[in-house]
Every structure is written in structure tokens, then in C-alpha cells.
Image (cartoon, rainbow, N blue to C red; front, top):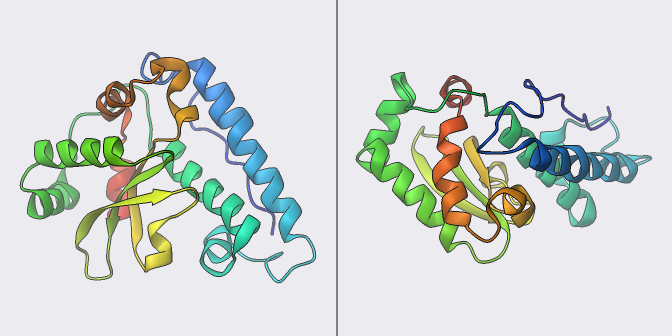
Length: 192
């Protein structure tokens, strides 16, 4: 089973001005594609050749883990966006966020602070443990909460290639704006 290069559910200019077409073309079109190609090259002739992406991330190490983890994180990242979405979650996810963080506003503040506090490149995740409790997790390189037995509900990429063309060195501006793109229906489905 090959590692899939996902098709975006929106045109490359749909997320403008928060994430521009130029950034999508580099980030999705070049960075993600390179990780997919390398992961597929690395699984050839190995025990992972017929494994799912999640199985590869859970069981591999070294370069294969790095590339497969980047594919998984990027897939989760790109598939959670939609033009003219944003707002706040509703339903069970909204209640779980309130329970874990006190309010949606406190959650976004803590999430943004985690993104700003992550030195270098990496990811910030809203994750759910096996008991259903939500937490913020930070990961460097290809880390993902599934390696800790958790499920990813939401993920923001804080590698410079995710925002530098649009925001230069202003990671805080990117983190504040990206909420306007979150499709909370996608996050709710991941939560259930």
C-alpha cells in the first residue's frame, strides 16, 4: 500500500489571505509531495510496504518515521481547513474544550502560546487521550500524539515553511489568523 499524496478539498487559492496560493503551492505542492515520495521510496521491500500510514508512524524509526510522520501531520493539517469557516466548535468538542481549558478563548490563547513557545520547527496538537480528555501537545520534527496512544483532533504547523512566505518571521500573526480557516466539523469528527 503506497503512502497517499492527498488531494486538497479546496483550490490552492481558497485559503487566501490567511494562507496564500503561493504558500499552498510550496507547502503542499513541494514539501508534502517530497515527504510522500521519500516515504514510498523507503517502504519498498520492507515490512511496511503494505502498512497504513498510521502503522508506519507507530512502528518505524529513523528516516522512514520522519517522512511518514511528516506526511501524517501534513495530511491532518491540510484536511482541517476550509474557506470561510473558522468561528468556534459546537457540540461535544466545544464542551470538551471548555472542560479542559475553561473556555474557547483560553484554549486559543494557550494553543497560540504553545506555538510561540516551541523553539525551532514543529507542531502544536489538540490531542485526545484514551479516556477522552483533551490536552495540548507539542512535537518537533515528525512527532505525533499517536505515538503516545492519543488521537489528533487539530494540528497547526509551526515550521517556517508553513507561514514564512505570508508572515515572514511573525509566527504570532499566523497563529492568530489560522483560526479563521478551521473547519470545526472536521475536528468534531476526529473527536468522536
